[in-house]
Length: 467
Image 1: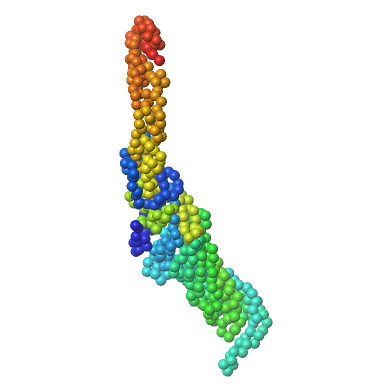
Image 2: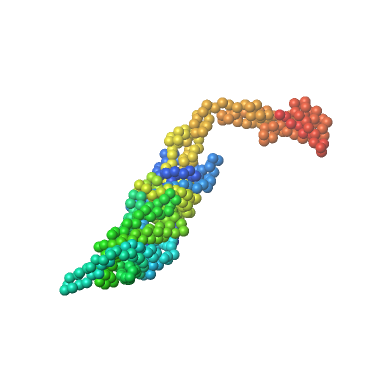
């Protein structure tokens, strides 16, 4: 039983080897029983190969080709994985319109770097200044007389607002995996300077946002990329404050109205782009994450049957995987992330040996489907074992086997005497009469008398062959 999947030791796994998921027999993709289990054999094994080898057709032990397996990560396990990565220690900040994706440290008020960096390549700091905002606003001048605020309405005038992000921080806690996407609950705080020109008036108010709720959802495409599906920024109203407008009442209304709304939309677009770029970096977020999980020590992955993954270097009856290579990312849906992997050094993940009876064998030495041979018994007199079953044996003759001399078997356990050679010939290993003579005259005459064919080589040596 595997334990401590998300303990302190797990935090250090990212630069080490990782683990893998269950599968099948050598060289054939598909699911199979889980790792580390064994079952009893009802037949004794005649030949057992060492781990990582299988019985070949000749009965010799041969190295197994690659094993294929499907790895499955549930959203429950993914939650623990994200927690172990200290993903909450990452953050996104902006200073003087320059946005930076930080993986931890002082910028995110944490004492150590987040291990998210093993799967995320942050984009280079970039200019994220919101675009200018244009519109019109009714001008009114407000004065306070004896404690009363008195405003005088005026005509509408065109304005141009130029927001500049003095500072911004996006901080989150847990990343929560759902059925097909991950939800990030975050808060956004910012100080945004706004230069507003409404000829002939010019003001420079400041919009301050404090702990504005932000919800981000990202899923996956068919190639393993993270896809940011939505970035929902709450209405800034209750979380914002406008200062620096003085007696110009229209300024506060302008900033907390259309300007604030436009700035919120620009921030929402910026966060979507920046987070998407950060997640995928130079690779594929989900593809890389599954590859790492498959090679992690004490992995949280399961195989396609729900049994624990076999880790790199983990010794099993089927062998020891040296590394797992992701051959196909399958996707994120129905509460789990899946991918196909291959590895050498294994004949199977967890193989349940089959008995002679389960394979309908009644005789001979047969392969148990894992790594051993079974003695499935012998046939009675007059029968022969063919493909694991006893068949009536039809004896062969000397003639049907082209044997002219010597002793051979009739294929049914009996011996046949196929005669002797004459005329100076001898019986060779192929049960044919052959011989050589010094001169061709008498030798060839005797050869022909015995029914042989005599030929003379260039050297003058005669050869007699009985077919």
